[in-house]
View 1: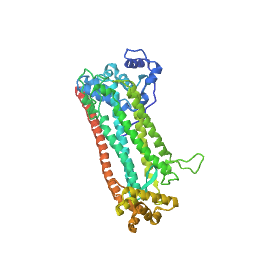
View 2: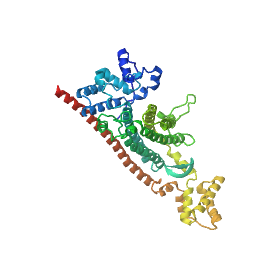
View 3: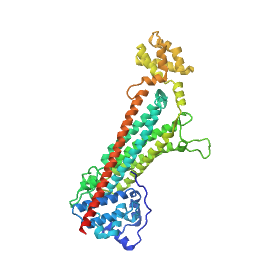
View 4: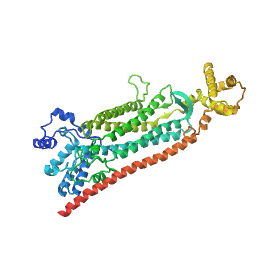
Length: 518
């Protein structure tokens, strides 16, 4: 399910009578004509291009309900529905009419006249209509983003399966810490992104509630059926309190917040790819299709796509802060300030969606340098922690004393330019005696396993650890969870499609009734 992001350029309506009629609709004879600069300043048409299809659909659903409730004449209502169906998705909108809602109403009135077309906004308002349209577009974005996240997760899990035994240094403070596997590290990124999926799926239920029928803020004296409209539009329920329905945007802030966290996780992943692609690390080679060279330095291969993911995360943060700032001092119920929050939603959704897709495509082609990773593992002091644990296990020396012994051993090795293995052979016994007063010997086979990075990783089979068997188990579980998340998206889309089918049947039913009358 895609979302159309384009809209035709604005063309002012030329016919003077038509202009007068439309301005009467907008100003209602209560006010004189809007100042041209004020009209431009308050227009939301740029952002409303996302809402066109949803607003048309809302108007049709509302009219179906008015007909079925006997509030609007059957044929007049059907004429309105037909006029709405004739409006193209890329409708040319006049900025003098402020927004998509008035442009669509004007198009209907132009086609069927103001006696019939004037019923279009009966028992509803732009306030509940825009809140509903935003939710409809946003739920599609959520499904698109969640689907793209699933594809990214699939790629990460595939790369994990390829690297279950690929050793690498684990880092804390960007310093070598303990040996792990590349699969273990990549899986950590996957799990953060999996939680992003969970947040979006959890938020969906708060987005997919209908404000329609709240009208401006106080509902209406007409006996409308809010649940019918919600059902036709594929909502799971209502935003019940009518003031809350038109004035809340917490659902939007929640999604932007989810996306900000998601972009943080994408940015951290991208940062590591940038860092690891440097000559100092030389852990990964970035694909040429996602790199650029320098305009002056021909040897350069710059990881520009990954860099931009980092930068674009900041834009989503900005959208989140702007949205919170708009809402923080806003009295209930509807205020036009809310109009300026809406572009932050679409901008955040588009940035996130494109960032996920480009990272997925890039990650599929990233090459990991296994030889370099093993060099980094062997050349450091990564087995020091396991040596501490060995002294505790084999010699019953307390952890803190063992920690001190190995710390002294590492310092001596570094000062004298020795490897950890060499220092263990030459200096460990003396340092143990110096700290404990005991002369001890450790079996050579025990020390060999202690200093072997592969054995180091294998022994860490505690749940969630880096042993290949444990990581393999986690990958299998994540794949099962991923299948369920794909199923969730399918079910949500099926639910929306089912509502669309019901919607079409209602229109067809009205049409058939009119035919029988003739």
